[in-house]
Structures are given as C-alpha cells and as structure tokens.
Amino acid sequence: MSSTAGSHAKGPAPWKSSFLADINKMDSPEFVFSSLRAAPKGSPTDYLPRARYCIFRGFWAELPENKHNEAPMNERVFESEMPTFTSDVRMMKIPEVFGSSAGHATKPEQSRGSGGGGPCEAVWWVKETQTQWRIKGEAFVVGPDIEGEGEESSGVRTVKSEVGSRMTIVKPGEEGNWSWAKELTAHFGNNSPGLRGSFRAPPPGQPTSEPYDDKELQLGSKVEDLNDPVARKNFRVMVIKPEQVEKLDLSDPVKARRQKYTFVDSSAEWKHEECWP
Picture 1 (cartoon, rainbow, N blue to C red):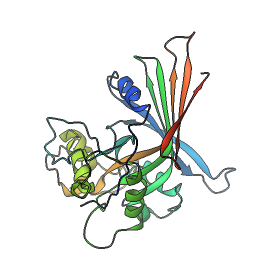
Picture 2 (cartoon, helix red, strand yellow):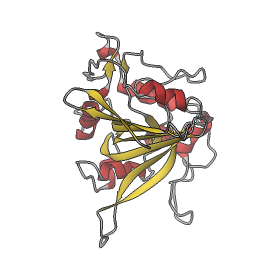
Picture 3 (cartoon, rainbow, N blue to C red):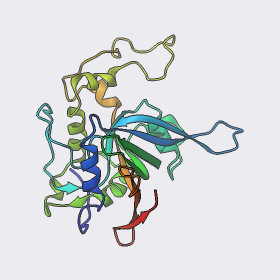
Picture 4 (cartoon, helix red, strand yellow):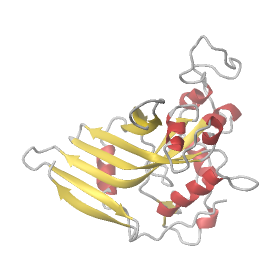
C-alpha cells in the first residue's frame, strides 16, 4: 500500500475548474508535451527541446470513471492538479525527463523504473473556446516498481515525495488504503485493448532492418489481460507537477487576457496575476 502523506490544501487550484471546462469541450484532449534531451557533444547548449502530441488522461488520483475499465479502482482519497498521460518506457520522453532531472540519469537502466523530475511544458489549444493553456513544471514517471517487496529505489522515493506532496487528502483516515500500484493498473485498464496492445509493438524508433523479439512484439496487437507481462513491462504513467499555469483567452480580441498562476511552495497556494495577452 501507499506511504503517501498527502497534503491538506485549502481547496482546488483556482484554475482547475476553468481548465477542465475548456478541455471537456475538445473532441480529443490532445496537447503538446515538451521535454529536454541532452545535446550532442560539441553543441553550444547542454539540452535541446523535444515535443510531441500526447493525450490528457485526467489528474493524478482522479482517474475518470470508464464503464469499459475492468481494473480495480482506488477510492477517491486524494485529489490533485497534476495532469497525467501514458507512455511507453521505450519512448525517448522517458529518458529525457530522467536525464534533465536533478539526478541527471545518463544510463538507460537508470530510467527503467519510477522517477524522473525533469522540466517540461504542456500546451493545449482549445479551438472551441479560442483558449490556450500552458502548464510548466516537472514530469515524473510511475512504473511497475512503484510498490512491491524490498527496499524502495531512490526514484520511487522521489516520486512518492514530490508527487505525493501535491496530492490533497479529501478522505482523511483512508490514506493507507490508497495504492500507487492500483492507480497504475487502473490507468492501464482505462486504455482500449488496441492501445494496450501498442505496448507490445516493436521497439519505437528502431530501424526495421534490426532484429527484435518478433514472437512477443507485433504491430496491431490487442491486450485484454490487465497483467499482460510484456505490455505492463513497457507501460508507464507520466505525471506533471505544475509550477506555473497560464490561460490565454483570445475569444474576444477586445478583452483578451493572459491569466498567470504560480505555485508558492512556502504557502502551498497559487499566486494569480492578470496580464496582457
């Protein structure tokens, strides 16, 4: 079970309801996720930006109900303002958020489990409301080692500390019954069998001329088993811990404004500023 302490915040983030109202109007909650990759030797800068489209999967500890999801679900013991999305551990975004973190992981095996914490940005353009949302913060990875027997890795401790610090307790006394592993499995079950099967695809980005395990890894696979060993080995949930959130409202050119929210660690509150667009 979880060792999450959680926090007793004074209420939801002031931007959260407005964000969800906009995102819920999108046909698909796609956003651009940007991270940093170590630059090649000899480059004039240490890191280079990398961006790709991802799908917003709700806030951490608040996985939306899905009648097709047969995975066991945690009770709503916590809430948060930390956006989540899923990824394959073989995708480059995973080692990027490890390599650009305070730990500066450089070896592939160092990014196989939970951890990370590198800087990131996520941007949504909501055409339906002519609004752009930008979330800046740190990205953490939840992997299959998040709970289990034996001593926790430094990566697991980092995730539980950093992510856990922004999980708000909404059902006091039940914190010990909330499970990180159950939440991870629930995210896996929230995907369709076809999407679960993508975690059994050939290695992303590897040239097709190179050998791979073609008995276990195939395109177009469908996975019904929530504990499929191959798919679960590759499946990860990524959690963005926001430090600053911006809402740019362009729906009315005369009244356009940029709302900026900055998280203040010392008070665990959000500072709000209204700015010109």
